[in-house]
Image 1: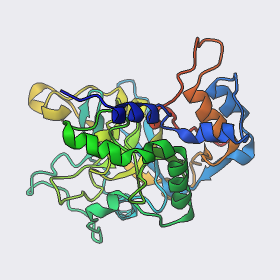
Image 2: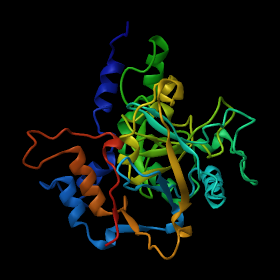
Image 3: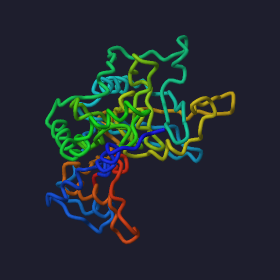
Length: 350
């Protein structure tokens, strides 16, 4: 049974601040103000200057076999920028250039969790599809990144500034945990969260480390038991409640920005962990091709995409509105929002 104490009271007070402190800090500093607009209305009104284009070379295009009515199914994935997960992303670029995924399949659909794709015969050495040459083995240390560029450095500074109260009682919290059976308050996954270059991240301020987080639609790398970290040949995307317990345990490499409905609506697998079991009547969905958008046929123009810059005033107002809904439907603001409840807006360029 947990003990109550003055320390616990202090921790509860400290933890009352929202995970996303940036929006509140911007409001307090006069850079933004409370808005009665809904988040979608703020996004719609965001000026062109607040949007950042996504390079075609950073888009992965997955075409599935057509549905039962013959309609095409295309999924577009945005790959993460440096300094995140570049070893795995380099492998993914090589796999796409080699057309390695052509003829593979969706192999796993686990309800409220993930959809996973790759070689259905990967575990059978006699039948497994040969991987292209030049793939690198990425160490587990690459699951996190340090203050390697200005964006990460600034995010760590924002995290520290937005969570001063929490940091003031970190040592007290640790002392309390030694007397109980674990953490009792606060985010169990990280002390702080933020956004870097359009991506949700969490951080360990004392260690000066940040890492991407498992929000809905994020794409990760399937792997075997540690120290294996996966090559990038097996990928998955989140189709349920954010499985943040996977953070820093599996590499994240991107997010689905279009076509998630073609994955989330697939029949659930009847095998263990949602893997398709043909003996139980499951049928895999085939993958026709996976290509970088920059390598798509030029006779069929591919759309351009852009995201709302997470350094913009529009995003600060949007994040505040997600945390504190003031539009007509809502009775009272929530007072905070989980980082995964502030999805970064992405749109096609008109």
